[in-house]
Image 1: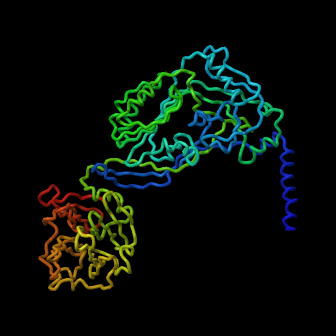
Image 2: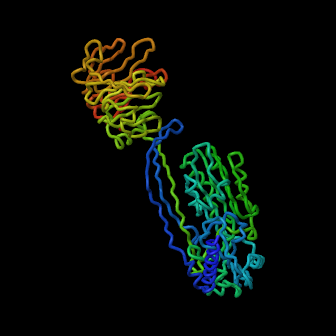
Image 3: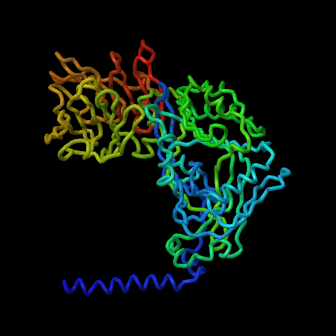
Length: 597
């Protein structure tokens, strides 16, 4: 207890010293403690890029996703956007805390104010275009603005601005709106966030009509901001290191429409529809659009934030069935008296410079183009440019279940996993099963094919001289057997080695069949198990395979069923190309290719 009592005077002394320190400061020193603002930068740097293949409406598209680190300046000469036009702190001359400028509604500096003068920027014969108040408050400034507007002609300038841009993430949307994603965007996300449930393309449209700008005369000294009763200690409650003092020098009034247009149509189609619908409004004092172009877009959704005009503030979502609501909203007539604050410019008390704050985010931009007409089926089209660049040539391959395929490199120590529009890996061969792999893999075949959930997979080593199995439970067999023991009778490839295996047939009541190719890829024979035996040996060149390779040699392959039809993916001997063989058009055996990896 004695220790606690001893500490109390020390704490009181510390607090007292701090108060005395603030009391000893001058206005200039308090403002200097807050300081000014660091310069902002604007940049967009790609930091990552991924390629993929998407199947869209049954067609193959090559997609590139680029991740950007983006930085932009919020505020500055163009002003901070205002998504709450009724915000009580936004008026010419308002004092704001600098560290809060990223918020949707900044924090104020609540001290008594000196007087000031406001004016507007229209030169339209108004003899009362400025007004001086004895003390700057929201109410006195509001009254001064009403005095100016009441004497202003009702005509509006035809100064619409129209901008639109593609956005692919909510963080990118926030950056385009000029607001901080972590702070201000959360206030509008519920009304203006992305729709889910479909794969949408999105365009942000901004229609801005500035009626006039009210400006606060720039003070030439601190006496022009603070009442005589204010002390430096009063100001120091709000201004300190990291929280500079600022004031609103200009507020622009008018009407603004933000439209987030979402559609499952392509971006090219959306771009054309938006341009055709809105490009004619720039030279007009009123918006007159036709909804016909937008109505051509598929699964259309338009989220609208409208500030100003007769409706003052509107939040709504529009679809194809009520597109006229948007046309009617934009066509509403308006007068100068219906303008609301849509943006504001902030200056630093420290040096009267216009303030910008740094906005930073990371977002993805994905662009997709139709795959060139090469004839690749959608099950393999995404291999082009991805297999060789990421893993190297293919030395072995086998199917999983359905359209899942496994591709193994020439060294037999890495593999990739493919499905429609997806290609993962490469992974080390040890990840293919549990336990230790018996060897590096030079050939493989899922002996029950791709139409069963579980199957053993036969694997041949890279020399083509021995074999083992990956069991149906995913574990490696510990038994390694010479290929000379693969058949009850003679094995025609015992000396040269086996270089490729293709699944051919599965009969629940009889033998399993696979095609077996020699190590050179020049000859093949049909292999049956139960009993284990080889059929006649045939040459690949000039055979019914009709492979489009030069030379016509096989390095690996996959046999698989799609419904009742059996197909083969055949890789050339160097592992750099493949062809597809089977009843390509419903009847007859043909080969198409070669296709690059």
